[in-house]
Length: 455
Image (cartoon, rainbow, N blue to C red; front, side, top):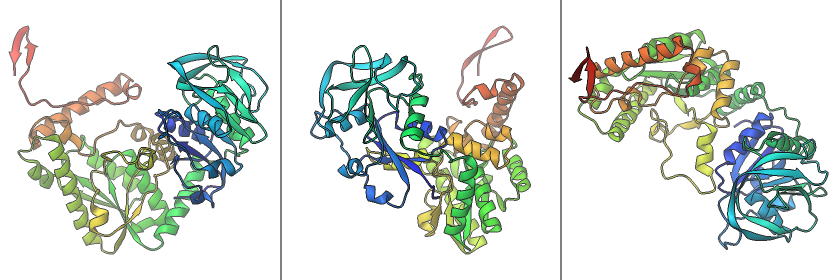
């Protein structure tokens, strides 16, 4: 959405670690994007691309169907770092030969720095790295030389300093590679020459400018869920366009204890143009007698759309729908393997865009979850809100096995509140990624007063 003055492109060949590469680059305050290995370089003509990182992948170049990238990337004279399969692609391109290992190498290995290189500068002579590969280079590609080796792999790291092309058979992006962060930063700063000026402050500034440019004088409707993502999106939009943002917060009767009131109070303090809607009776009526969890989700999603459509009609003149889409959702939809079989839409407004012919605004689509939290902190959200555990869109409905009733919701709400309160009292809430109560509306054996119970 925003435009950055420098970026790194990460070409995805299907590695399970591709997102980790992006995280490590972003941690160095360098903006990057993950693109499929089949990407057209012409799409990035106007971007100041400083270099490429080729991810690993499960394929073998001995397979005629193995993925390759357009030759234009090699011909663009930008620095390039190939990781695992990406290294093998570079070697193959420049005449190196590969061979399948007798056994797939997976796990820790010890890297020895062999020759001086910019990529491994400052790395200890011996360090631990993480391997995950089946093929390896047996003949050095033209113009390259050995810069690192392991006991079983003479060409664990290679480089062509004249062209600024480098390859690593191990994975610097994973924590098991002790000097991985250092190696990636060497590539970014000393080989690609990036400045490292992509910060949370930069994102906020550019995001607000981009929202203003996209929306202009149009009205925007945003669904507030009570979670971090939609709240951060609301603050960004509000700072960009003020009262032209209409944030709709629906009480579906399935929220946590006091959540509706607490979120309203916080957002009003932040001067968000908020439209609270109590539709709890509507949701619970439509859920009556429904026990299948997928049917619950669909009913809740469709009811949200109905409520939003009604609110948008009351406001009038809505042109844009804002959503809290995050970068992992974007990656999923453009990954090398293509869109996954089911990409979950936002439970509340999934079909509203098409039904009302609205244009989409996604202010967080460039951020990972931890970056959203960092943005929230800088925008003034309280730490206890930012650190809250994730809560599902359909709320308590998917934490109640069987039929959803007002009585069961009240019971689960109270139990969950007590449970979370105890975690806070014992100072362990922040040490746990997620904790919640589930209502099992079936009889179970227990003990009460030293006697067996079944209730």
